[in-house]
Image (cartoon, rainbow, N blue to C red; front, side, top):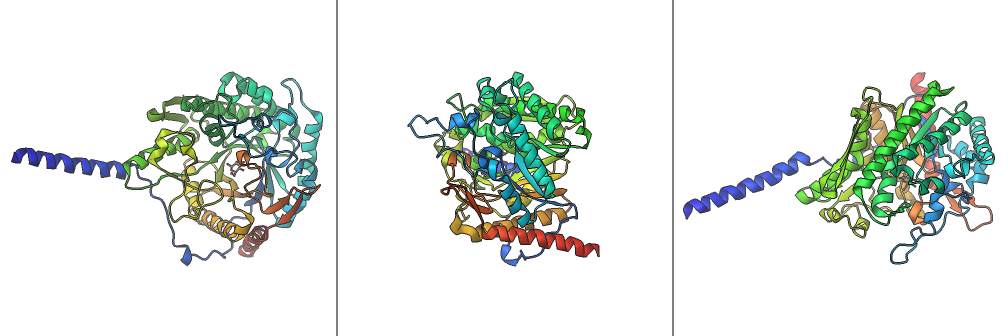
Length: 486
Ligand code: BGC
């Protein structure tokens, strides 16, 4: 009897130890700083050639998307309960298509050096065999106006949307469709490559793919969730990126260009550090959504493998010593608190709040996590390329301007700290210049430095307090650079 008791105690002790060893092995520390004792009014510590910018995407700001875009189709769809997929239509929106000169004036007011925007594939190529000269000429004018204002353009080729004809072929879910994207990219580069140096092939393929194949927050033509399909699509975006990179480099002006890809680096943290279930879910989420892409551009291996959700895609770069990337674009918003319940991957569960108790919620599912940008820079620096922060911002209603300002100050602190420690951060683009169309949330979320009134005949832009703060931050940083040079 005694022996059995002893044995049972040993087993129990062993199990408890194993539980904590497992937690210890996969735990990623969540940084928290004492912000009370940090001076946030110090000028940003950046180099002379640091790029300050603002970012946007065509579908979110231009309006006039009557050119057969896959988001136009998605805006007409309802879910199985009859609920519209998208909260309202993009419509004329901010009408940047016509009002871009006003936006450039506002960029000048802020003092930014660069504007990151995307070109609309469906406007440029409304049909598989047709390029639209009017759309191409529009971007000529936008680029020339930016250059006249001494603002450097950065073009994103795919920011979540594409033509319906491409969608109908299966978009990036099929490897044989990559050639259409390469053809589009070639046309764009041939047209603008004499004036535009910076190109991002894709914006956040993971976010777009996750919305498409798992949560139905992006156009999903299949009507179900499937991790394997997501993995295959992501692999295809990597192949497409590499092919576009090579194509651009082979064209006149290609050697002077900088071609990168933009990655969202939300950390997938466990909701409860001492809960092995939360740790395991967070571990897989981090592996699939962050590490797999980082591994591809650092080690040449895309390992989108997680047996609990049936994902098993392994793709090796055929030329691992030749990573096709001149910069890595980093988008950062927050971290996600992962809970064991997510293992169900039930779509309704996916709307569970992703913030921690005590964290200030934003208007999206996640919270305000001021240390996160610094962590994201560290994580993405495994890709040994210059880091351009291509998006950073916070979704908050107008009554929360104080928090938007605090968020901006802490972000600038994070990037200065990272630069001081030697991380190669070369640019910071605020998301976004204007409040705009926030995908399935329609116009209900606000990320802009400028508020946009859309109930007037011509949408009008008004600077928020955060716009004035960003202007001051840029001016102070530039002055500090001049003073250190003296
Ligand atoms: C996207 C933007 C979006 C922003 C705020 C990023 O993931 O690139 O298009 O508006 O997040 O949610």
